[in-house]
Amino acid sequence: MTDAVNGVSVRRILDRHGPLTGAVALVLLKRTLWGLSEAHLLGLAHGDLRPAKIVVSAAGHSALTGFAVAALTQGDAAFRAPEVWRGGLPSPAADVYAAMCVFLPCLTGQPPSQAKEPFSLMSWHLTAPVSVAVVPEPLRSLLRSGLVKGPERRPGTAELVAEVERTAVAAFGPAWESAGVSELAAVASRLIAEAPRTVPSPAGPSPGGSGSSRPATPATPASQCPARPVVPQHSRRTPAASRRRPPTVAAVALAVVVVAVVVAVLTLVTAVLVRLLAAGSGDPPDLRRPGPAVSADPIQSGPRPGPH
Image 1 (cartoon, rainbow, N blue to C red):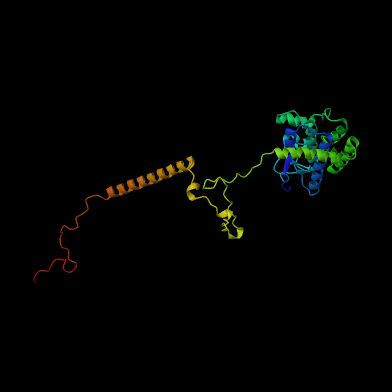
Image 2 (spheres, rainbow, N blue to C red; image 1 turned 180 degrees about the horizontal axis):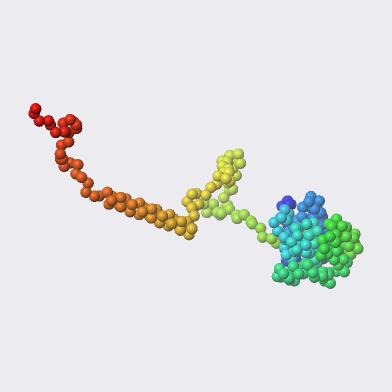
């Protein structure tokens, strides 16, 4: 993670300016390795190093951006280390490989490999020998050491920084770094100046038509501005109407089955009731028809004795 940098990316520099001189490319490589070394000491790996992630200010100083994404990406395929292609996680050794892959187009203006398809890129990173014929002779050994296929044989950032210093002094003299920074600053400043900027539109004419611009309205102090209520994230709920979902096929089928079962049960109950009513609909005795009087007195119900 870095602070905001007002500058231009190395990707834009290569697109607009073309390849850089050896001294400028070595300045970028050294500063990139420095930044990676600081991150590696904290246990961080960049994981997605590429020209678009290196930003150069107008003073010629570079900064790395895009940290803290190593767990989310395997990096750009053109700069991906062989061990990451094999399924390994981003690591300091993979960052070194990516830094050297960035260094190569800084010198040539071309990507490390001309392959476009992912399978061809994987094959190039895994097996193809590094072609350094287009690179100046003093820098070839540096490239070969940083682009070794095996991560265990790849030098660390501190070792590579020392090798960059030795190579640059031997190739360009003791003042190589200051000269490279000055040249890089000139290129970056020109591209930063060319970048489009948003300019506030001038005030329109006054209502009287005099052509003079209206005076600017004084800004309201922050203390007088009404505070906007802060709505907690959990309270921002979607209205109930918008949360309704159309019924699915399974729900419709279940509803049809339930209705059919209810209708069948009602039909069965109705049939049973009809049969019970039909069975009890005979000709019962009419309780209202008068019958023979039956005395409740057992004595009076027998034959009466005759006269003696």
